[in-house]
Image (cartoon, rainbow, N blue to C red; front, side, top):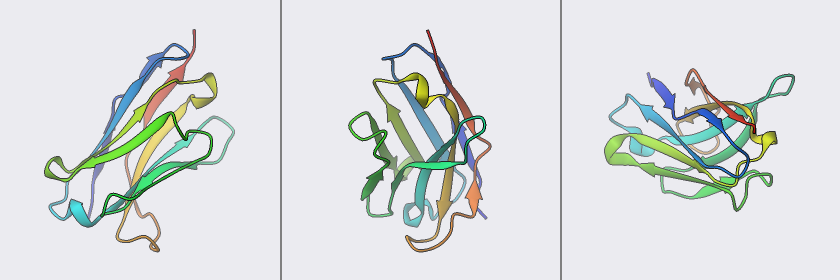
Length: 118
């Protein structure tokens, strides 16, 4: 079983930055594939970025060049650094985890809300 806890959300002005954290309660964290997703009101949950156990990363086109996903296996934590935030980035952000690239995400956090507004 894997428990995930997100933190770091909040209200930020357009052009600002936030760093989200996803802490996992699992000693084998280093072999987990972890993704950041977001869901805006009325929209489906979408993948924002993910990172493999080896540190390979993937980003949605809408966030490329602005967001950076990283992991610290010693702290069992994955981060999402979000820069140049836009109002359309407003959503609840969730982290998910799975055992391998082709597996389905079956562990989820409770979400952290990000609001980009002036």
